[in-house]
Image (cartoon, rainbow, N blue to C red; front, top):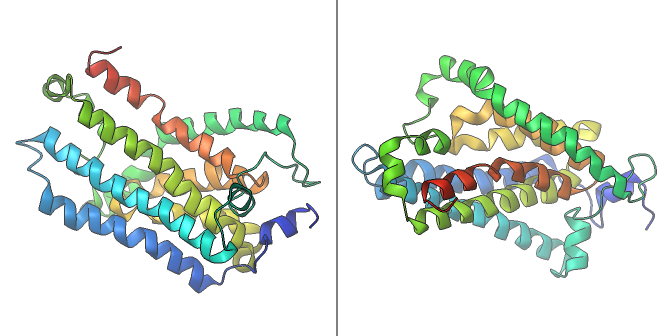
Length: 270
């Protein structure tokens, strides 16, 4: 098989239909919504009386949903390709060195494009709570973030920081969430879906992918507008342009570069 862009986009199978794209999308949306809006209220203690306990339940449940996305990605690949060998995963999920958009050849120097895209995602993260997210919540107040909606803000509370000292379970749950938030979301959206969306959306498949990614966040609806912008321009665009899911995996991972150190600081280890 040659290495031009169109043939790589189709891989070894035909492109997905719109129905199949939406079916896979729902297969990740519905479990996350159930875990966040049904299981969490049923299982978690009241946040006001036990914020740390509520936070652990939330982290654990979200991790379950994200692990499911990772497993679902592997199930889909296995059903399509017949095995889960590294060579198969690498080809099907675009887990390869970035490729030149014109020639389709791998070029290591293209990794340098990570720099502007990482800067872009930090800019979007800093703007989102003040613009798109705030506008969305003002129109739909029912989707406003609950008290434990933003883990960064929660960790700034002095009383909670005192409770976190020496709490390794919280750190472990957070790291589990972080790993599968990256692998689960990137494998399913950029690895499984993006290479198969061109048949429906053509050259705008990366835009559609970013919209689906943002719209998947109904378990955290106050973040949907910002997640759409991040999904389109900071994750789907580099993955699509360079035919490499590693680009979006690395860019997405920077969301979790700072918070672990903040938690370790609270635990008294740094």
